[in-house]
Image 1 (cartoon, rainbow, N blue to C red):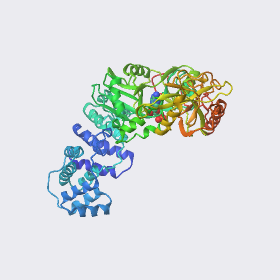
Image 2: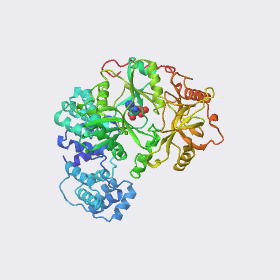
Image 3: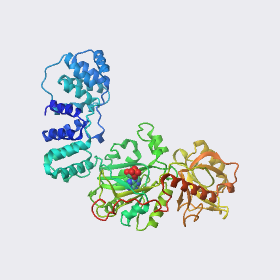
Image 4: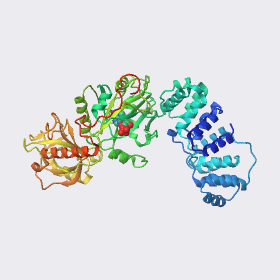
Amino acid sequence: MRFAELVSLFGELEGTSKRLEIRQALSDFLAKVEPAELPAVIYLLQGQLRPEYEGVELGVADSLARKALALATGLPEGTVRQHGSRSGDLGDTAESLWGEGKKLASPPLEVKEVYDRLTRVAEAKGEGSQEVKVDLLRDLLTSARATEAKYLVRLVLGRLRLGVKEMSLVDALAAAFAPEEGFKEARAAVEAAFNVTSDLGEVASRLATQGLPGLAGVQAQVGKPVRAMLAEREATLKDALDRMGGTAALEYKYDGLRLQAHFSGAQGGPVKLFSRRLEDVSAQFPEILEAIPSSLQKGPAIVEGECVPVDPVTGELRPFQEISRRRGRKYELTRFQEEVPVRLVLFDVLLAPEGPTMDRPYPDRRARLEDLVGVTERIDLAAREVVRDLGSAEAFFLRALSDGCEGVMVKSLATGSTYRAGARGFWWIKYKREYTHELADTVDTVVVGAFRGRGRRAGRYGALLVAAYDAEREVFPTLCKVGTGFDDRALKDLTRRLSPHELKEPPRDVVSTLVPDVWLEPSLVLELRGAELTLSPVHRAGDGLLRAGYGFALRFPRFTGRIREDKSPEEATEVKELLRLYQTQVRHAEAETGEGLPEGGKAPRNEKGTPPDGTESP
Ligand code: AMP
C-alpha cells in the first residue's frame, strides 16, 4: 500500500471529531489493507510503531527533525528554524517548505518502507545514533511528497495526534472484518482479544487472516500484559456478602502498586513486570525480578499481585506513599531497595505452567496459584479466608486493617467467576475504609522490646515493640511495632540507652503475643504518631474493651523524635485514653463518609441487583 493512501486517511481523520465518522473512515480503510500490512497501519494510526506496552520511542527531538528537513530540502537550517517558529508546528513547516525547497524525483513511498525505516530510526541507540537517525529521516523525507512530509515529521516527533482511540479501532476492526449483522458479537470478540493481548496489531492480523474464529483462540502470552480485571464497590460488608449470596472468599486488600509478573520459565530467562497501566516497570523492582524464578520455579506463568512496601526490620506493611518514592527511579535504586524494600503479594494467576487459567473460576485459579507459588521473603500470597457469615467477614476485615491493609476484596466463588480482563464487575467487590487524616493526637508509648536491625541498621536495634499502660491491671499491653521515624543517630542513641535494660525473659508486667529479639524492662517513653487506631487480634492494649480477643493497634506508627524524658512508664498513654481516641475517630469517620467503623450494615443499603449465582455477571 502506498503511504500516500494512509496519509490521505490521516487528513480525513484530522478533519473530524465525530466518533461515527472516525469509525466509518477507519473501517472503510482497514478493509482495504493487505493482512501483512495491517499491524503497521494500526500502529501508525496510533502514532506508534509497536503496541504501547513495549514503550518503543522514536527518540527524535525537534532539533534533529530540523536538521533532517534542512538536508532533505537543501535549505539552510536557520531557514527551517525560522519557518518552524512562525508556524509552531514542524509538520506544517515541512509541508510548506516543500513548495520552496529543492525536491528530488523518486518513486512513491510505500507503507512498509516507511514503517521499516522508522523502526530503524527507533532502534538506533548509543554513540553515533543521532547521525544515523538524521540520515534515515533525510532519506525518507527526500522521497516524500508535501503532505507525506508533514505527517512523517509529526510521527517522528510523537505528535501525530489524530484522536484515534483504541476503542475506535476496536469498533472499526469489528465493522471491517465481521459480517454486518454480527457487529455486536464481533465487537465483543475483538475487544476481548485486545484485553488479553493489549496488542491491536496482533488482533487485526488474526482477524484479517483467520476471521472471528481466529480471535477465539487468543490466550494470555508471556510478555504481553493482560488488561487488569477491576472491582466494583459496596457501601457495607453486609451488602458485599449479600450480593455474593452469603458466601465469598475475602482477601486482604493491599495498598500498593498492582503488578503483573510474566515469567518465561527458563531459569535465568526474562521476567517482566507490568503496571496496571501496562507499562513495563521491570527495571524498578530488581528484587522482585530476582525473586520470581525461585518462587515460581516452573513456567511459563503470568501471576498478578500487589507490590507493597514493607518495613526492612519488622517485615510489616508500610504506607503506600513509600513505594511511590521508587516509581520512575533509574538511579540510586540500591539505596531505595534498602530503604523501601518491597514484597509482591500475589492474588491471581492468568497463565499456569500447565496452561491458560483465565477461563477457570476463581476458586480453581486460587488453588493453582497456591500450588505454583513458593512463599519467600519477597513473594507472598494474599491472605484469604472463605466466609459464610457477617461475623467472620468483619473479623477478617479488622485483621486486614490491623495488619496495615486498607480493606478487603470480596471475591465470588461462583462458576462464572473467570478472570475478566479489562472488565469491572461484581465478581470482585472492594470494601475499604477511607482514612484521610492522621490520628488527631500523638500517643506516648513505653518501649518493651526490640528487633535487631539489618543492612545499614546492623548492630543496633532496627525496630521497637511498644506498649500503652493499663492502669487498672497495672500492666503494659503492646500497641505496635515501630521502625519508622528514627534516623541513624537516634537509633544508635536509643540502642545505647535501652540496652542496659535488656532482659532474658519477658518482663512480668508486659502483655504481648509477639516475641521480640530482646525484651526490655519498661523504662523509656517515646512519642508516636500514626494513621489511626485499629482493632487488632495481635496487640493487647485495651484487650476486650470493644470486642473479645481484640486490642487496639496503632496503624503506620512513626516516632516523632521526642523522647518523653518527663514521663515515667506509668504515665504513658492509658488504654482508657485509647478508647476515647478510637471513639473520636469513629465519629469523624461517620461524619465524613456516613459510614461507621466496622460494625457492619450501619450505612444505608444500596439497591444494586442480585448476588452472583450463575454464569452471568450480576
Ligand atoms: P481500587 O484501586 O481501589 O479500585 O481497588 C482495586 C485494586 O486493589 C486492584 O487493582 C489491586 O491493585 C488492588 N488489590 C489489593 N489487594 C487485592 C486483592 N487481594 N485482590 C485484587 N486486587 C487487590
